[in-house]
Length: 219
Image 1 (tube, rainbow, N blue to C red):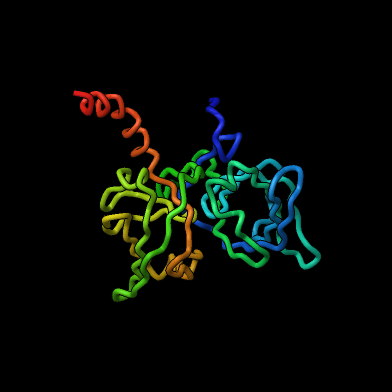
Image 2: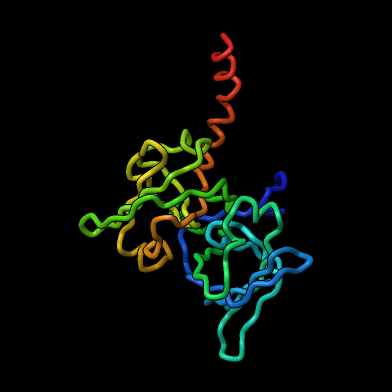
């Protein structure tokens, strides 16, 4: 099945928002293909052309292999349209990133349907401990706020999460210990920006209702 070209990726792949590795940037360079990143990871069976979500942004593996210590690595390139919608332009060597490979037919859907298309950036406004949960408040751009519902799904830096509460200008997340240890979310600090992908079902509903809402406003 063919899909329209995404602003972030020319191929359409699905993810679940369940991060299965924390990689880190080994090298950043500017090339004819865009801002190129070399990433160290645990994967040893990647193939060129494979799609991979890096902090929730779907990118294409350009080259891959193992270093002389047997560690996996791959390169990707972020084009200007990707850089405009993400914070990839700020990444430097040693930046830690959440990784997820694309789903295969028959895989379990443990999180929710994630496209790897970053909608915009959110900003961490508060971080506090509540019992065994880490509460993180994130301010969202105005256009994303109507797509959020309490206890609905949201993807933050590639991680499938549940909206713990709606705030006046964003959402509150409750991060469990497992997620803190197996993703980079536990290291978030006030002022950090994060990749946000709204639930694709909410985006389709908004699109379908837009003509009716526009007509109501003109009456």
